[in-house]
Structures are given as C-alpha cells and as structure tokens.
Length: 332
Image (cartoon, rainbow, N blue to C red; front, side):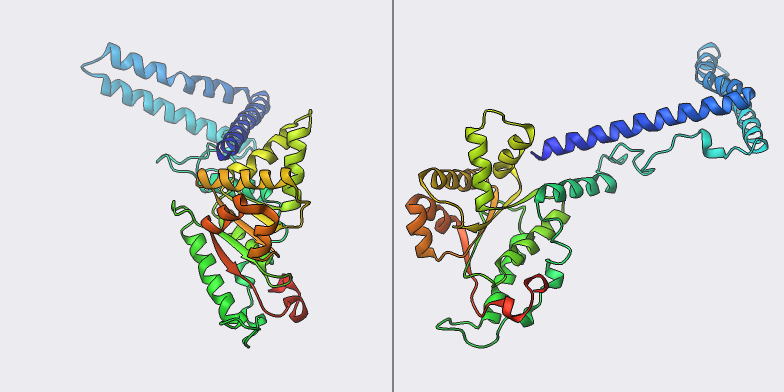
C-alpha cells in the first residue's frame, strides 16, 4: 500500500517539474519578445556543446586551446545577456527554472540517492490524511499526557495504584513505538471500562508513528465491519472502498477502537478473526482497544479470535476512577 502512495508522490513531482518547465518557457517567450537579442544569445549558448565536441574531435593534439576560446566566448555571451536583462529591469533569475524545492529540484531525491526532506514530509502528510484522526493529534499525544490525572491511591483489589499501573502501560507503549520496525510479533490490547485513557493512549502512539511516515489507520470496530460488509456485498466497489478495505490488512499499524460495540454475529466474528490473523501472519502490527474484559472477549468472539488475541497481544489493563470526572479526556 505504501508503494502506491510513493507512486502518487512521484507523479506529483513529475507534474511539478513539467509545470516549472512550462512556466519557464512562458517567461522566455515574454523576454524574447521584449529583447530579441537575448534569444539570439541563448540560441548561441545552446550550440556550445556541439562546438566543444567538434573542437575535441578535429584538434586532438591542441583541443585545449580551442576549448578555452569557446569558453571565453560563452562567458562574454553570458555577460552580455546579464547586461541586457539588467537594462530592461528583468531579474537575472527570471530565465532560470524555478523549483518548489531547490535541494532536490522537485525530484524527491538527493544526489546521494537518499529521500529529500520534502519527500519525507509528503509521506508523513499522506499518512496523516489516511489515519482518520489527524484533527485529534495536536492535543492527544505523549507531550500532553498528564500523569497527575491518574489516582495514586489503591483501587479495588488491584496490586498497583492507577498511577503506577499507567506508568507501566506508558513504558510498554513507548517501547512498542521504539521497537516498531523490529519483527517482534508485538501487538497491544488495551482493556478496561470507559474514561480511563485507552483511546488517548492509542492516539499518542499513532502520533509518533505518523510523524515517522508510517501508515496508521484508526477505525472503530463498528466502522471496520461497515467497510467489510460494503466491500463483500457491494456490486460497485469504488477505488475509495477498495483502498479502505486493503488498508485494514496492509497499513503499518491498524488501531481497532471500541471492539465489542459492533453488532456481533458469525459474519462479524469471522471477519474480525481474518483481519487480526492476516496481520499477524504478515507481521503487521495491531492495537485493539475495548471495554470488554478478557472473559467477555471469549464469550462474544469465541476461541478462534480470543486465542489469537491472548496469544499474540500484550494485554494491558486500564483501571481507576473515570478520568472524565477528573478532567476532560482531551487534556489527559
């Protein structure tokens, strides 16, 4: 899937170069019409390559002297052109091609073959466009994570306080991000009641990975099943629908939020299993967030789904007082 994004970006670069060349030709036509001598000079300079080749071929023993003469002549032409441009109040760079990125000349790549920063930024922008949560991430990220909102007092029969627990969760999530590119079969399951920061934590992880240019797709379980049903049963599979379906399997990270809120039946259970299993098999990482307990997951989804989740996901429990009573979840 990422390859298709790269192709799109490279096509954009090609269009930029074509547009820049057409704009240059338009500016040249204006200048040539105003000062015909400048066109004569440009035409003469364009012939220099041919003259240099002839000088080398016809004077193999003393071609250097002839080459120097041609270079001096070319330099005089350039100086005359610069004077004409100045006299007519035309900026010297007016007849040079204008790129949006002078570093890579709108190719996306440096001379070393490495991606230009502008190319990397476009990948990040594309990833954000696809994520479905770009509007949330300015607030919901690790920089805005407020540990003070979590209680430092014992909660029910839990061994750790909510604050101690969330610190452990935070440490695991940061490790998940740090080791994301490693083939370590690491996936995460966030479970616990509502209002404990599960969605916020998902967004924190998404933010960092998106900033690295990873393709992160964030969907509720309800929306995922909606996409699957439309793709399976619709006769008109639009390119947008096809992409939405394929991204569930191919994106770098799939975040399934609110597992258990969708209408569950044999079809939905099979499809949920297919997505999770396919991603595990293809070493694609997944985060699942749910209000269900492990026992409820088994009861609703059966052994096939629950065994894959329990066997391949790091299960992280969220507990404590509802944070929405402490502060708005968007400022966690």
